[in-house]
Image (cartoon, rainbow, N blue to C red):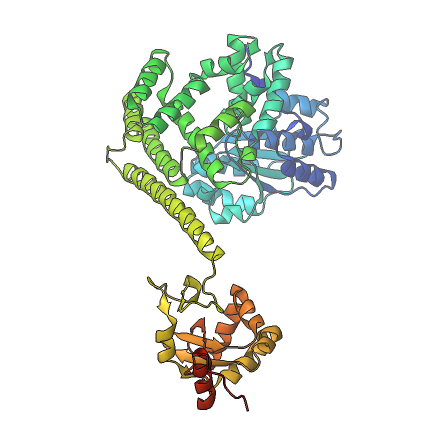
Length: 539
């Protein structure tokens, strides 16, 4: 009789186990150091090697020629176990033998000494399927077993195992096997079977198997039966999957909002007998990859695709935002669940794609999210355009003097950095009419020394006047005004004024008129006489 590949190539030593070094190394060390426990609990998803490791461990603890913790596979005990003739190794499937009586029989037989082996080993698979009464019957024997008994419990659903059982076992958690490790094993098995499998095909099977070596070997078995030369196209044909080009075409139809193109592709795939459930699952996988691209800095490590397909997916990702990808995944997941419950696969797939392609179909919040996403993108583009124009305008204005502190004109201009922008220029003469001499100006200069001694020295001997929102500065030193043309120095001056007055003022120049100066009346008359050409005696 033909033996399936997953049975034919089941590992016989710990060294042959793929992808579980944290388990195999620990078990080998326990055997080498003779620190063998009485109860073990193997936890993990299907096809990760729980039963395989349990059988290898049972052989290794009973092998009389154990080598570095591994069974020799040559002695009678190892051969009897491989052939299923070892009476002291008992395997029980708890899915079909879960009653109290089944467990009582095990507990009663455990009291007898082994026939040929050193230990009686009981391997109970799918232990979570035992009834509550069966767990209770096992509890006492599991807690205090005879010295010659070892229990190995295996389960895929550890949350269903009572805490009283868990606390009495050494727990070993099996990881999902990586696609790379599965591909490496598939290439080895195919070579042993006289077949040739391409690396990309092996990687694809590894991804489809979802960490289960048994599932991967079953797929390889089916492929070898079809053709000895296995490539990616053959794998997809055997599994009833759509070519990856069709997947990208469906994604493009969603981007272009063309439901007609999507429906025509579905019709073509249906005529080729493609499985709609698997197609939906494939789409979910690709949109999951898009989600990773949108959220992870280095997504390629998490995406198992050939380089050219990864680049194509990277280009498509530019057309999606993260909220849109999440919404599409929600829609596809709902369709997948309904297909699994027996709904018409083709109709469900068509409905999903019409929803994803047509934004006006308001069956759920996805379309509303997509429309809001487009609106937000449009607003962001508009804001960025306005911001660029505004920055350009401000740059041009900043190139001009915000207000010239020694300008001979009778007006000053307010800038945004000084406060509210005036729509018209401020008349200097009007400000001077309302100006009041600032009594605490010397305090401002003292504080200014803490910020900049250079500015404080430049304004030594100056005076200031307050007029509305302005502080008008009267300084004879032109260097002072040159310094205040720089925004950083001007901000220091305004900060010092605020510390004294408690208010933020704009700055401006104070140009004294003839009324502002302390002028002798005789000097004023002399100036008038000179204007009329009259000689004046200076004495």
